[in-house]
Each structure stands twice: as structure tokens, then as C-alpha cells.
Amino acid sequence: MAETRKPAARGKRERLTQAAVDLAHRQGYRSVTLADLAEASDVPLGNIYYYFKSKDDIGQAVLERRLGEVAMMQQALSALPTPLERLLGFVEHTIGNAALVAEQGCPLGSLSAEMSKHDRDWAASARGLLGGPMEWMEEQFAEMGFSAEAGDMALQLQSSLQGASILAQSMGDPELLVRECRRLQGWLRGLGGGTPT
Image 1 (cartoon, helix red, strand yellow):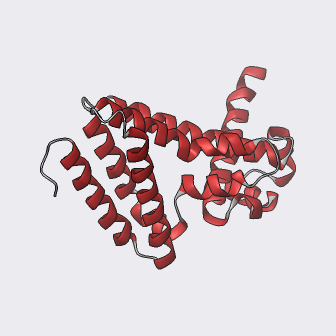
Image 2 (cartoon, one colour):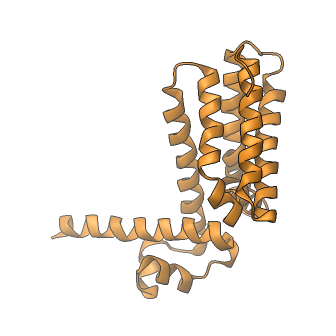
């Protein structure tokens, strides 16, 4: 009988985690209530503490989920044959999320900013939401032959993406983010020996 409970427990924990991730993106983690979480996950309010001992445990699960998403995206992009294609793919992924970013903000940037202010142990991990991709970008630029400038180039790319994300959200206009991403793709192609578009 215990074996049949474990998948159900994992299912409810998964629903709670996904609901917490979605709510944190839409309204900010700090403003998410347990009642919000129960409603969004379809898990009774009284059962939440069976899966998470505290709201901080829920926050940790949200952070771990987002960091896992970053790792999965980087792993998928690493299958592309060249560092230029990987960087272009990263920017294309941002274009694919432009409508969501314009409506709710960058899921990684928003969470990183919010959790970096937290007075517990989250700040260092939260920095990985944007810092991890920057390190990965730096590796790609170095592999392209820009070892000396790779850090600055990664900073430029990430800063441009995050700045355009904030503008797109503030203005409610995904096209602002798309335009900046297309400009960045042209810059990257120029660096890679291609023709900027």
C-alpha cells in the first residue's frame, strides 16, 4: 500500500511546486499565500505542510526548480555544434518567451532580484539564476576565440537581455524585447564571422 501512496505524494508535491513557481512569477514569491497555493495546486490547505514544512521550504523548491530549468536549457543548447549556435539559441529562447516576459517579467530576473534580498541562505543560490547563464555565455565566447573579452561580452549579452526584458514588461510590449534580441543575434553573427542581420 505504501508503494501506491508514493506516486500520489510526488504528484501533489509536484503540483504544489509548479503552482508556487507560477504564482511567484505572476505576483512575486513574498506575496504568495498558502491559500493561493492551495487553490492553484488543488491541494487542500491543511495538506500543504505534509509536503513542505514551511513557506521557506516552498521558496527553496521554487528556486531549485528555476535553477534546474536553467541547467536543462544549457544542456539542451550544448547539443548544438558551435558556440555561436548555442548563443544564438539562448537568445532565440528569450524571443520565444517575449509575450510572457512582457506580461509578467523575466522569470529568472524577477526571482533572482526578489530572492537576493532575502535574509536567509537564498541570496547566493539566487545569483545563479542570472550568474549561471552568464558563466555559460562566457565559456561560449571563450570557445569562439574571445578569451580575453569573454567576461565582458557575457555581461553585455546578459545586461542587454535583462534590460530589454524590464522595458518590455514596463511598457507591456513584447516587440521591444524581440527587437533587442534580433539586434543581439546580429551582433553575435558578426562576431562569429557571419553577416549581421
